[in-house]
Length: 66
Image (cartoon, rainbow, N blue to C red; front, side, top):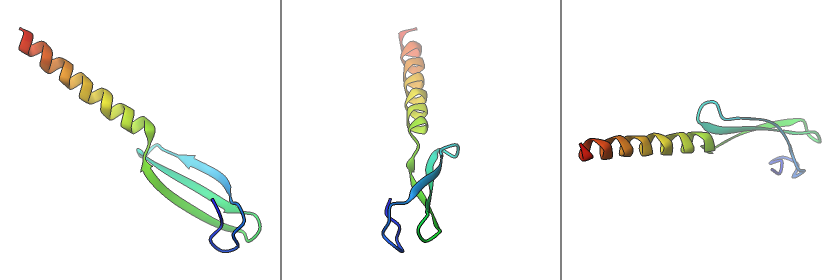
């Protein structure tokens, strides 16, 4: 990520996804600025939701077969 103040490349300091969303902290060594970038849904959350939907569909299919 480019620093919005000086245009230098920023260092990725931290990336967290525990909330289900990607949050990245960047730091610019040149001008000492920190930037927090809030991204989209975390990959683990997408996969977890898909697994949950597949499990619901499987259970519904089993009920129909009985």
